[in-house]
Image (cartoon, rainbow, N blue to C red; front, side, top):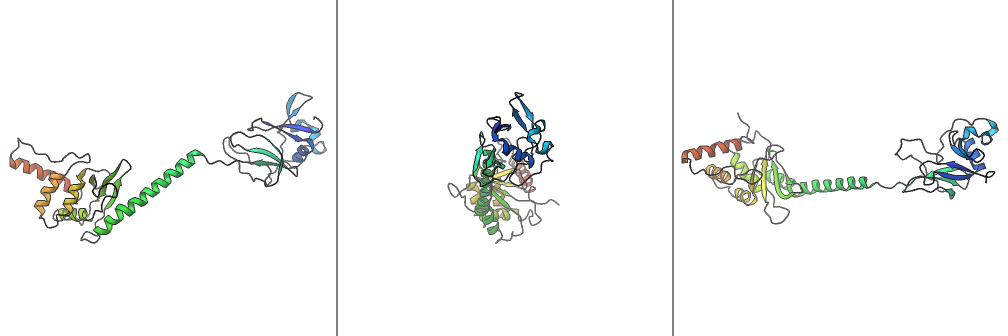
Length: 295
């Protein structure tokens, strides 16, 4: 064996060694495919030695030239834990090292050249990220087709076509809650605000899940919701096109709640009628000021 075969140290494989014919090793050294720092087992010394310490493997008893990379021969040196880019040969391998868990393996093909075969398994984290990306894209597309597009399309047929509104469902935990963003707009005034809310409610598409009614409809001028109405109250508001401003205000104040569903205005029995009306007027101004620019 000492005359015909050599044992090479190959880090990262199961046995961390591979046995190759001496003539194959010498040819690989002369081509620069095996560097002078490669460890080879020396039976006489009973120890691992570098190629540079074994003159009988070097051509003409001289150090081989600096190794040069050849396509399909040896991989580039990379940081630990990364995968080298290699070209896998289609030729039949006659020698092969073991490889655990899909790691690379050193091959010797039928022409005696050293090659590396790489198993490129798709990491589970990449699968998870890909699935999440698909879910997000599907959710965005579904929200646009089922909610935002029909809402803006129907509102554009009213006098408030220039008013910006954005509608979307309340994420995965609240799929039957509709959130409508209404940024403060110069098209809205204290005189047409109730009319705008009626037009907006009338333009709202039916809920895509469960019944045709949303559980709640949240109104917000920004990213955080502050006010909401029940889905049934929102539907009723959309049918108040023939009511006057005072009737709409009273209805909205009676139904208006925070995002948790707690009423914003509640009757206080120990207040006089005038005090209660003043409280309702104050709550309406606070609500209206979120969407109507103040002079």
